[in-house]
Length: 438
Ligand SMILES: C[C@@H]1N[C@@H](C#Cc2ccccc2)[C@H](O)[C@@H]1O
Image 1 (cartoon, rainbow, N blue to C red):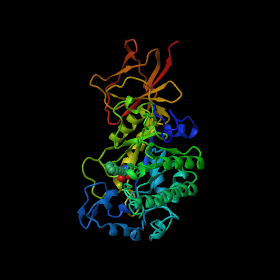
Image 2 (tube, rainbow, N blue to C red):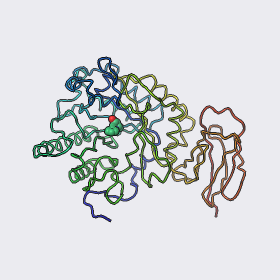
Image 3 (cartoon, protein in one colour):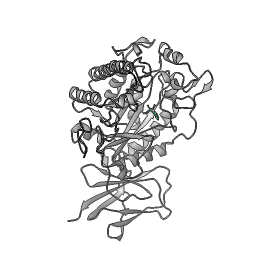
């Protein structure tokens, strides 16, 4: 055990109501929106091959040209209420929204920089519009904030000279001021999703970041902050030098899902996922594999089956509208959730042996088990291996509770559920009402 001043300040999961609610969200929406949506992944007819929200880092668009895009930012089709309705239709219980990405452009009228929506043709406070619209729909809001700020003159990647350190002290004050401003302006937000915290300049700020996290939690009791915000005094990120999770949940699952339950180490976590392989901001040319509704439904079930949440990214266009492909996916996922949401919301790892046909989830605080079935075997028999001393009292289709199953016991704790031959085009859910054997 290494003595740490700025490591994790808690071992084990948070047990307060705010975190309990977060744990039960199941499905969320990420929205990446900002100046990068204007070029949409290309400039002067040339395609940028990286993630569209990183286009400023490409030499295909002069930095000054990119930085001046705030003078062209006038999203006439922006309608936060429409965004929130789409999220509601999808079944998202929370949204993570980019207040400021790495380019430094603020979608709220920050007092601490001129590089904000206030100094754009649009002028109005976009963060407020989004927070109000999602609150209205009953969808909790988490604010994304990039510490790395390519626009700010005092940003440094590392601190090599005295001048670097003097400049970065100014940058640290600026960052703190903006975060307190966000929490003060938008008091209903439930958390902050930090990004751009990997560079040495910030990693060296263990004491400052620890103090800032404490200040933010004091200002906003119950605030949810993930493992990506700060490093410990040895530069350890996500997990401190004793291997204890930093922050309230593991925030490392970006475009990847744990392979097995052991990989989550009993922590809370969420997976943030793009529809294309790696595009967060709007890219007009979606190339490569574009995930289908069924793939995204399976990712949702897979995350919930291992105690996590699945957060699907949307990248609105420069005019503020959401692209049709994303609307279609939201509708497809939402149609499935309308029938099967009971197996996703407020569910957790069931403790059943993983089977090839799909995923087990368990309703938190109950013995109700859900089998989210994606791959019916040719035998049409679904194998179940229960934890010891478990009785299956009833088994039935969630979508039609009249369709009841009689589990065939194969051996102690092992059963087959025999399905009728069915045309299966969508995943379906079977409910197991269980009890502990005396
Ligand atoms: C949530 C996602 N994190 C950001 C990133 C990144 C990144 C940076 C360096 C190397 C690999 C990935 C993406 O731009 C998006 O905001």
